[in-house]
Length: 98
Image (cartoon, rainbow, N blue to C red; front, side):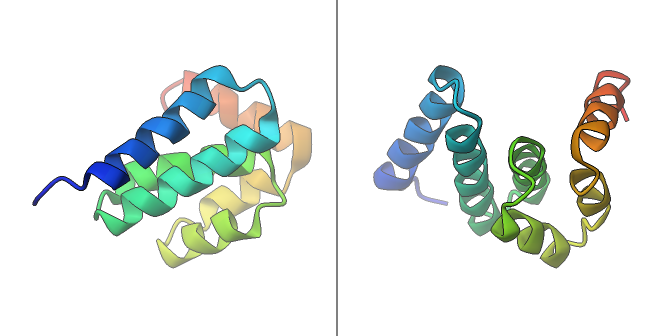
């Protein structure tokens, strides 16, 4: 597979947003876009992680929710729809390695 310099630059730009931005909405949108890019590359597991992060940061992101359903990851929707309790539960689960 050949490397697309524009695509790689876009991913680097999105990673910079994740590192530098303190604004949850901007970070959620960056995770969403990274998820889309990774899906198009066939990197489904990484895409799912970014899409879940997008929903944890902004549960209103319908595009992330739709993509997760398409990938068969509907379990992320349950957590994302529970508000602060769901977010706390998801974070604890990640810390515990679930």
